[in-house]
Amino acid sequence: MSAREQYLQALGVDVWKPRTGAPVAPVAPIAPVASVASVASVVPIVPVVPAAPPDEAAWETLRSQVSGCTRCELSQTRTQTVFGVGNRRAELLVIGEAPGAEEDRQGEPFVGRAGQLLNSMLRAIGHSRETLYIANVLKCRPPGNRDPRPDEVASCLPYLSQQIDMIQPRLLVAVGRIAAQNLLATDTPLARLRGQVHRFGARATPLIVTYHPAYLLRSPTEKRKSWVDLKFIRAELARARSGA
Ligand code: SF4
Image: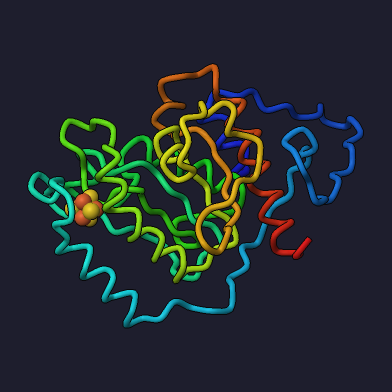
């Protein structure tokens, strides 16, 4: 079974297959797209690594700053900071909201069931934890998994911005309403943020919004929309690679 089929099955989305002997329509190549509606094809992608690696010393300095950070009161309740994980030359940087209880224990973002679903989602478009980078808006867990407070986001976001500046990804993907609204400084509902390319930071890095995997586990009706988002992400990445 292909990665795409595994993901769709994990989401409970029916996979259409032609009957044996039936003619199979040719798969169209990915073309530059401007909207979700124009994304239709399914083509495996071989991740391309951008040329410039982040400066090792600067990266470790930043990591050290984060691990000892006391800029906000979350430093008093965390078990440890969750800096991020993945390829520091990634072309795709996935951004969640904040560490949960398990992430706080393990020091890694997106672990547990939601993390497994995120892995499946990313595999379906040709990526893995080894080819991309995953981080959160906040590096420390808010107690009881409450929403991040504006002052906490203001204190912590500069760390993520520095990571983005060092990695220089082609595309950012904000997963979930909290991450999207904080990165884009808006209170627009997630449904209206999906399906378009936003910009983030001084480098105006392209940013796409999709559902949080934990939300998808709770909300079966949104599963098909998530697949639409993934195809949009893949197509936008292809467009960014081509320089179009
Ligand atoms: S959440 Fe961010 S700003 Fe607050 S203590 Fe943790 S690392 Fe520092």
